[in-house]
Length: 248
Image 1 (cartoon, rainbow, N blue to C red):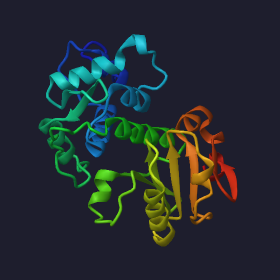
Image 2: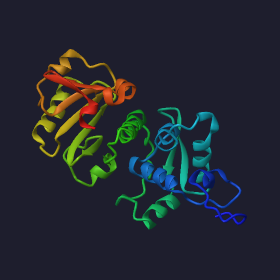
Image 3: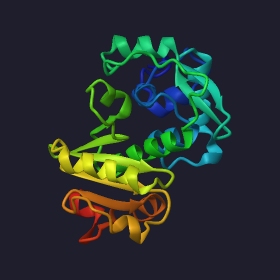
Image 4: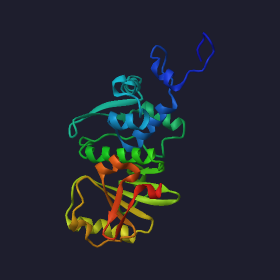
């Protein structure tokens, strides 16, 4: 509330007014929770998830995140593997989530010496979560949450689409055939997942497409084209194809 006219400030106005004590907004809490569930994030996924449509030059996202750092809710670090500034949840931010029952049953993530070794992969997975949410598929279970389920194999994430689970595998670098056989065998036998999406950073090769797998459940798509074409992105295997919009 402003003392002058008694009007209620919008979320944007609360965040832009740095002359007053910090008031956490729903967007701030969303940022804290997303980072908590994915260990860390660079600025771009945060901007895409919570400041989409705002010009980069306005610096609204960056200024707000840096204020959350200054006030102790987030920590700033640096990924030498990706040459990026990344943000992690700080103890104060964790306590805030706990007080609201939004800690997802997870402990505060404590970074290891090589925490960012797979940062390119981790940030790609986070971007996938954000893209699917933009397309209306917002029920995502992150790998940190899946660890609690004590599965024999952890997908990079699991989408819940109208009660059906879709395992997401982000394939940042091509594996040998034996590794793919293990993956395909797991999803062929594990009936917990209705589908498994293999999101490939490289172009899909014919030898991979031709391998033995459950063609009703395992589908391939290209990471870059998924972001380019969104609901029109093609998912395919050796028996057929469909556009993502079919399940939206």
